[in-house]
Image 1 (spheres, rainbow, N blue to C red):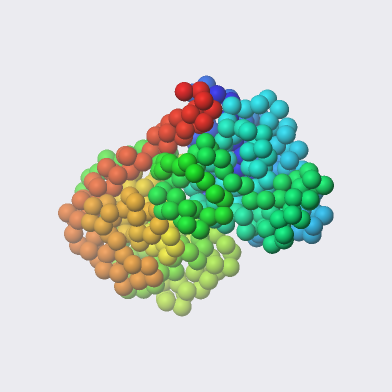
Image 2: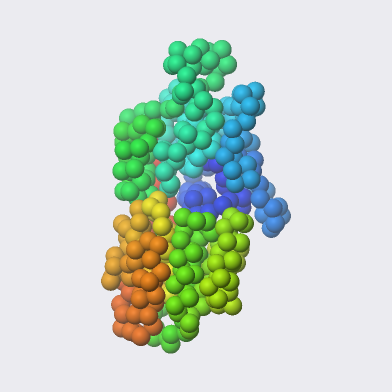
Length: 400
C-alpha cells in the first residue's frame, strides 16, 4: 500500500501526543512493508530537534495559519500565496499516485488540500485525535473568509484563482477514524466538515517506551506527578492548590508550557507557601517518562476540559501508578472510578486532597487501582491502534 500522510506537524518537530502517535503509526506501517510519504508544514522547533537526522519519507513544505503558538490571519495576498504553495506541494506529493491519502491533524492547515483530493476522487481516511473537524474551518484563514461571503463569489474565486474556497464535505466512502466516541459525537453535532462513514479507533501507548511494570507493594512517600501540556485547561493549578493541604506531599509537573501560564503556576505556588514542594519542568523525551511515572506514588490528571482522548493516564497505568483523575470527554471512556482511578470533579482541590489521603493510608486501594490500571492499559496499545488504522486504509484503497 502506498500512503500519503498529510498533517500539520511531524516529529521531531512536535507539540504533543498527536504528532507522536502519527509517527508511531507511520513507522509501524513502513516496517510492515507499506510505502509511506508524509507531507507536513515547514515549522521547526529548536534545541536537539535541529540535529535530528534527515527523513527521506517526510516533505516539510506546507505553510499554515499558525506561528509562535498563535493562530494568524495574514493579508489576502499572503493567504493566496500560502494556498498556492500548499496546492503545489500536494501535487508534487501526489505525483506517484498513492493508493490512499491519510489526513491527520489538520488544524491551522489548508482545508483546500482535502477538497483537491476529493475532486481527484482519491481514496481518503481522516484520523481525528482532537476535534479539528469542529475548529479547523474557523482557523483556516482562507476558507473561513470565503464562508462569510456569497457562495457565487466563492465559485468565481475558485475559477479565477484555481484554489478551493469551500469547506470540504467528505464523500460517503471516506472513513473518519475518531480516537474516541466523544470526538465522534462532537463532530456530528458541532463539526463543519460533514462526514458519513466513521469508526472509533482508540489510541494506545508504546510498549517500547512504556513497558508494563510489574505491580508490587511499595511504601508511600507522597510523590505526586502531573504531565502534559502546561496550559490552563489541564488544571495544574488545582493540583497546586491541593498540595497546600497535603504538607507531606510533593508535586512534579512535566510538560511543554505556555510561558505566561508556567509563571502563573509558580506564582501561585509561592503565594500558597508550597513553592519548595513544587517542581515544574519542561518536556522530557518520551523514553524517560516511564521512569517519572514509576517514581510517583500517585498520578494526578486534574483536566478541566473535555479531553479528546487523554493518553497520559494510560501511560501512568503502565507503570503501576495509581491515578486520580477527572473523567472528562474521551478519557471517561476508559477511566472507571474505583476500578482504575479515583474520580474527582474539575476544579476541586478538596476532592484531590481526599483522594490522595485515601491512597496514602490504604495499600489495598492502591493495589486495586494499580491492577485495574494495568489491565486497562494493556488493552490500549499503539500496535492495535496502528493495525486497526491499517485495515481502514487498506479498505479505503480497495486492497482488501
